[in-house]
Image (cartoon, rainbow, N blue to C red; front, side, top):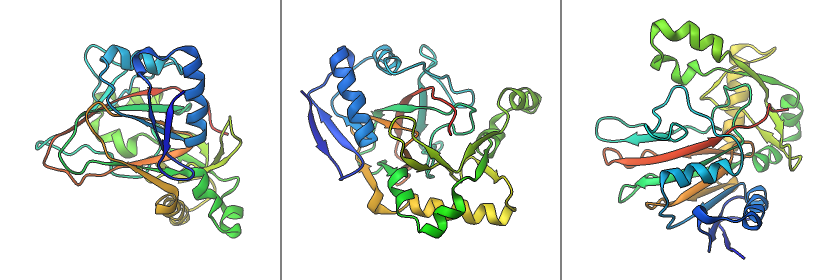
Length: 269
């Protein structure tokens, strides 16, 4: 039996009494249930290897290899996110991971490797609770809309000119519902973000900006969020279908290193 300590009423819980390197099948089933209930789970003092990090992620499904960001040399499933005095790479915008894929991720599992003395927290927002707080008028306006997600909005500049056509053919823009349905809980969830959404079908650029901005403000409501203070060997695992997240950049020029594995998901509906 785990010791589960909720951070808020609807989102976020620290789980104690578990070793991620030796989770048995019964414990894995319990973690799956907790993940659905709390959307993001946190673990402390998990001194496990990179191979064990990968193996734990694979218990939930196939892991993706990120095509644009730096991956670990020995374990390409691990995405290394490094901020140092040379550059700030914290994902300081509200988003769900890799929504530009045709089948965006089911979940992400992130490890704190090198953590600054202060700052560098990650915030998580309950996309279902944010949707529920929309006015009836806004729900009627956005239900049924479809957005175009495009990797080039964020990663386009990192692709060499001679590779751009090849990558565009491999990762064409994807169309996903503005309000998606969680396949396990049936919850309706905000699924747009300013990081990857290029347009919304049937809307002008100005209307697209208005909708994306309004929904982002709903995600930004502190009443639907939790906040995690990292320590080295802390882990966060979040349901990319149900939450959005934001990494604070209040620590620079101190160094912050985190490592993530990402589980492939299904096509949103």
